[in-house]
Every structure is written in structure tokens, then in C-alpha cells.
Length: 299
Image 1 (spheres, rainbow, N blue to C red):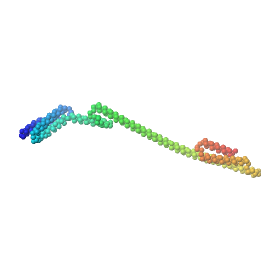
Image 2: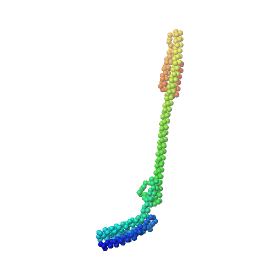
Image 3: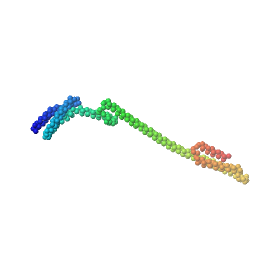
């Protein structure tokens, strides 16, 4: 057992000493700039060396554990101590070694963000097929130009649609206004014609009344003349002792007079019903007819 312990301790001491020798070197390697290629190379070399030591120690651990469980537990404990020492150094070195990859990833992410923001002003729809972080500058500029043109074309299309819609609205309003105006003018025309027709009817009725009054006056004159004529005839008969009441010519005159008066009266009544309808030619015919009839009375 003592011999095994010595072997284990000896092996552990050797590996531990070798790892301790790397400690100063490991933590002395710090990469802060992409240009530190030598430091990144050293970090990789140191990490691989430490990894080699750890794997060798792990192989030795496996060999020692075959002898006995107690030795295995001790070896495991010793290895855990060794691993606790070495792994942080490895992780540190790996972090330094991968500085460029992390830097490139951040640069790529910033590039994607900037390019996406540039495209979004043209209403760009993100497409996983567009690998913005991997595009060459010329390829990206072509994508920007295409996206911008599509955006401007859409704006122009919408502008033309708005212009057409506005023109249609104005035209519809114009047609509506014209229709309303025509409707109002038609109403005013009908109202005016109705008013003028009323005035014509009033004027026709007035003229008919005047014509009737004139005819009645002339008839009154004719009746007076007839009365005077009868009185004269009666006077002659009284003094001449003539038993004949009326001569044949007087009777004929009386019959003729009554007939003409009846015709005139009927004609006036008929004319009152028609009221001429504003027809001057028809009115002229009425007047000529009445004048002719009155002329017949005087014969």
C-alpha cells in the first residue's frame, strides 16, 4: 500500500509540477485585439499541452484504479484536484484562442443589424434566404437598390390611385352639382311657366269680361234702338189707324235680331270656357266674329 501511495504521489507530483510550470504562462497570455495572432497561437499551443498532460494524467488514473478501489478513490481525488487546477486554465486559454471568432461574430451581428435598418426604411420584409451577414458589399448594394425601387414604385402606384380617386370624387361632385342645378332650373322653369300661365288665364278672363261687357253694352244699345223703333211704329199705327201690328219686314228684323243675339251670347259663353288659352290668333277670330254679328244687327 505504501509503495502504491508513493507511486501515486510520485505520479501526481510530476503531473502537478508540470501543470504548475504552465500556470504563469497561461495567465500571462491575454488577447485583446484581433492583431495579436502570436498570442492566440501561443494560447492554442499551451492549451493543447495542458490537454496532453490532463489526458496523460487521466490515463495514469485509469491504470492505477485497476489495482484497488481505495487507490481509485485516491487517484480520483488527486485527479479532481488536478482537473480543478488545469480546466480553468484551459478555458481561459480557449477563450483567448477564440477571440477572433467572437470578434468576427460580433462584427457580423452588427453588420446584419445595420443592413436590416437600412433596408427597413424601404419597408423591407425580412427573408431568411437573404443572408445579410454573408453578402458581399456589392451584392448588398444591389439588394438595397432593388428594394428601394420596389418601395418607390409602390408609393407612386398608391399616389396615382389617390390622384385618380380624388379626380373621380371631384367629377362626381361636379356631376351631382350640375344635376342639382339642372333640377333647380327645371323647377324654376316650371314654376315660371305656371306663373305665366296663371297670368295669361287672368288676362284672358279679364279680356273676356271686357268683351262681354262691351257686347252687353252694344246689345243694350240695340235694345234701346229696337224699343225706339217699336215706339215709333206704334206711334205711326196709332195715328194712321193701321190695325196691322207689325209689318212683314219688322217681324223679319225681330226674328233676325233674336237669332243673332242668341248666337252672340252662346259664342261668348263658349269663349269664356276656353279662355283663348293665350292664343292671339284665336282671340282675333273671336273678335272678328263678334264684329260681324253686330254688323248684322245694324243692317
